[in-house]
View 1: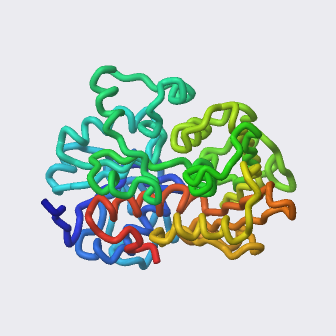
View 2: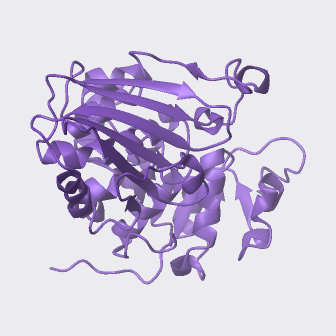
Length: 360
């Protein structure tokens, strides 16, 4: 039986105060399918401007002023009864991991689908999930729901996302690396015995809105630093989605002194001599139906400035003269394709719309 395609959708965003939450609000307010049903925005609002627990959306995010409906919307305290009264059909969780782990089952019990921007439901393996130190009041029920959760990479899991109740939006670093490597690994072109090296650099917004000693301007400006070597929490996503072991991939993230954007440089040894045409065809064919991935013509390589504030992941490569060593460059905006716009892609698929609606 064909899936019913909705003409519009009642959506809500929990956790709109952060960087990714602000971008998600902007995309949803401008989405052509949501013109008549603007999203609800929910969160805990304290301090100046709060009125009875609510605050004007444009007081929280002045950059949204004059967008359709934005000046008339408020951010209200989270309330399950209010979600039901408003007929909310899909809830975006842009909340801490622990909150999303608790709230997603409740939303589903209320008949509300979930796109979770945290890492609460991304990882199927307990060993990979352990880095987040999540706890469940009902471990058996959580395990059942975890098995149902779909990893929200439209390029890899589009049909499953379309039929999902719970979609776990991927991490930003993980997206940049998984999209760069998936075509090569699916085609069995990489020599995994030699290992894959992933060197990634991200702007400071990837660390979230709350400043830390390492993301403070005095530490990040005029600097470049590696961190979480052998222990970054996105590594588990790469292992699970690419079906690799820890011995087959090394991921090292770095902090760039820029606000946003990720550039991943990935070093792969091929298991047989390759050609530029063969590699180009591999990427082109894999992403022929993926509107949010742009594959560059070798030797052109992506740059962060090409993807900042847009919804694409750009991929390019260069092949060594001996045809055995491949360098792949992947770039995306960590707040958009690495978070908010990927969440909108997932919403589109879940609603039966084209995945690029509201993004191109």
